[in-house]
Length: 347
Image (tube, rainbow, N blue to C red; front, side, top):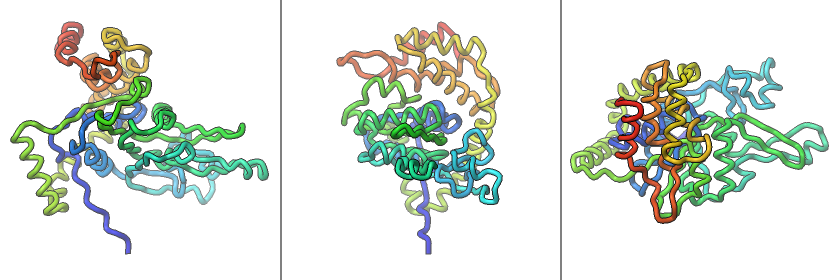
């Protein structure tokens, strides 16, 4: 007898933490934003939000039996095995739920990227791939708790795949690639050490979360949690209408976001903000545009404006700003607000 699935706390029932919830949703709409880094102390709903997000999303159409979870209907993103199988009776569609794939801190590069059987390739002339975490994560949520404690080269590997949507493996001159489009979520407690600036910059979005200080909101958090533990199914039923609205908005946004074309005014805003904040490189500019398009799509719009860029800058820019060892990584939001409004007008 299969074990009954444990009820998951509804995403729509999470009190507060609006920036975190929005950052997660934007990455859900467009995973190529590059993931979200959630920084904060324990007990601030980080892992609850990640699992709730997976439970919020609908089932996916995939190629049945594919170890890489290839998405059905996207021929350009199929792995080599699916391309070879296409057109045969074995090439069938299956429905699977969205999953949270966790990355253990002890993971090696082979366990993350997967391995190639070199002896098999030499003796048979055919590549034999043993899938790793990046294959299982394709189409799912890749959750890395305490990401700041991982080896830097493992973090690099994750961020490369998150940005490109593809995992490349090369061993002894033999190469292999497969789709690896996932929603990357890294969490960390800053008190346990930070990521190097070069790695911080690679995360598309970053949010800082802390425990709620308002008495009424803290009471609401406690009461909701108690209600959920007392009657999980009833609590979920009560929030299903809100869940359904969010689910539909995300699905609609996913279908629209690829068609949104940013105009010159949007690109201008995405360029001026990093320049004003002294951010090097062009990754921030591109991330601002991707996140702004996702935000517009989630709002039910098929056009993006400079105000959308302004809105998402609060989660795109803070972790990319220059700082010395005596400065923290927070952004003076009042100063940025004043400059943004004087430059682009009020939203």
